[in-house]
Image 1 (cartoon, rainbow, N blue to C red):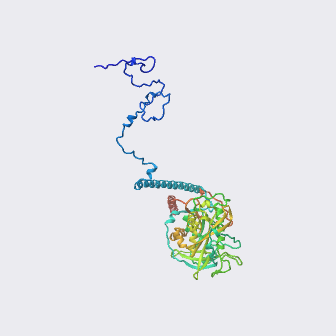
Image 2: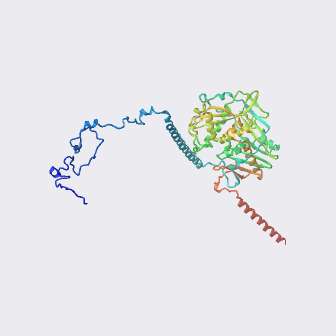
Image 3: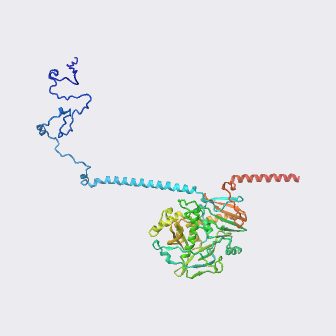
Length: 557
């Protein structure tokens, strides 16, 4: 059965079926039709969302589809579900009427998210600080630290000892040591300085008329007398011993002269040595200006710190003429000189059955404590610019003393450790630390005392992780090493860029007044022979001696 196609009339005058009832043959008479052209946009077939309250415009071509509402049909229409529509759950009214127990999971999620954001923030902060510290460390390593002594062409390097070997050493000495004699005189400490705070600071005075002595070991007449009496085999001062004991904490270069005379060993310092000054911010990550004429350079700050330390140690005393004198006067003072308050304790430690060490130790003041005399050491920390340390003493000293001390322990670990060692060697009962600051960061001549704190040396040593057994282990190893050397003069030099100590053999007239120093570049210095080179040299020497013996035998025949 075929599909019959009805009659399709053509409309040559327009688009769509032709008008007129005759043409449609009564088939489309009641179907609405909206005429349009090809350029017009077609609308919707059925628009159920249209707002019928708005009247259509006269130009709207779809007005033929605008049907009027039938009220009768509207009234007869009813919803099957007569319940009211549910209210939205995320509106403002619903928040205050919902079940509080249902909020817990949401709050917990918020807390977890907040903790995650805080942890991420802390991680970013740690990364930023790590990168900053690494950059500062690279800057500090890039800074060319100068050697404390110029290496000469004729010097022969015998050995180099890395600091990593010092950390494993341990040696115990009898405690307390034997006191041989005490000389000098001490003034009493003024306790009113313990009540100083940044609100009632005191101006730092200058003591230009008092004499301060920094005499080396071999120039000490008492040590010479004790050496002639064979009271010991090793001689040094507390400053030199403290430098050796705290060597692993040092960053700047230093040097110590070693003289082997017979079976005796003398540890000396050069005139104008770095040991006479005090380092500032030596272990800090923030590099100091490299220009020597800058008031904040390492050298300028060292001179300023030594000047502050001397004046502070004399200002905090009761200067009324009342002194505690000892059996011998100051061995370095001349008659009529005004001498700073200091007492020298010559003490002896037994290192082994054949080796004893005598050291000259210093105490700076004395106080009466329950009818007994207690010895004190007096030292001063100095603040030069708060932006380098990050802690303003005038704001933090009164409320956060621990934070200030922790910052100083980080920036000046070597200096504080050496002060603690000197107090332990002298058996001081209390070590007083003064906090001295510049009146203005750009004025390095005028200073004020902001605070004074007292510490017991043994307790303070445990706080800064200073092990006395390790300290004496370092000294014992260096003494044993130097005792194996031949008679002569040697120098221990801390490498300016590496954590190690080098031992050089120097001429007998080195560091004398007429000795001319010509520095030698490090790459041209004579290096110690390696183990392989030493073995090859020994074999070559043995073979040469064997050849010489054969020649002698042939000659005899």
